[in-house]
Amino acid sequence: MRLIVALTGATGVVLGVRLLQALKDIGDMETHLIVSKWGQQTLEHETTVTLTGLRELASHTYSPGDMTAALSSGSFGIDGMVIVPCSMRTLAAVTYGYGDNLIHRAADVTLKEQRPLVVVPRETPLSATHLENMLRLARAGVTILPPMPAFYNHPATVEEIVDHVVGRILDQLGITTSLSVRWSGEMKRS
Ligand SMILES: Cc1cc2nc3c(=O)[nH]c(=O)nc-3n(C[C@H](O)[C@H](O)[C@H](O)COP(=O)(O)O)c2cc1C
Image 1 (cartoon, protein in one colour):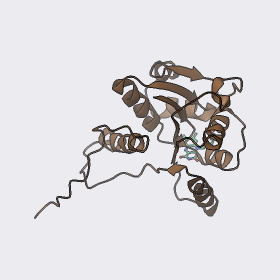
Image 2: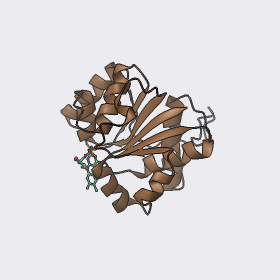
Image 3: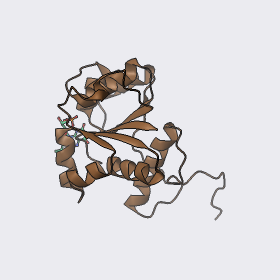
Image 4: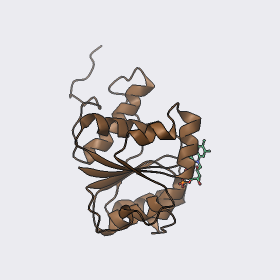
């Protein structure tokens, strides 16, 4: 599979890091990584992963300002794109087709070519503008997957919460993993 993974400047950048690790572990995945300027800043602030270390997890990497990249064109076939985490700025740019950088452009191309696009927005609380942008994208066929933790699986660590979200992202791309603990239908009895 050939996937684009974009990390932007919202908190929760670990979700993008973990997604790339998971895709690398699965193997046979061609990943194309773009990290926005503010994505790089949050990576540095929130994790111990360096930009170089992050890039080593991907098959190919691009500068967010590189509009000459193959990803800028619909002629470059991909199987899907994930923006994780997705800032409200990037959400707005994708909603309105404002191709200001390679992330926005690649998402615009993914939409016009009717390929799977998963957006993992991170902001709270959400304004009417944020919600309207998400609704427009959902109506255009985009999967809006807020990184909301589940508690029915009794997560004990932040890593388990992160893995659950990453597993749900991969589910959307038709990639089945054991990262998410699935609801068994069995309620805990007291
Ligand atoms: C530490 C930090 C955390 C941030 N968290 C968020 C967030 O959760 N959601 C959001 O929309 N913006 C957040 N921002 C603001 C964005 O980084 C800012 O709007 C930026 O312009 C986004 O640009 P980008 O979409 O190109 O990465 C945060 C900024 C910093 C420095």
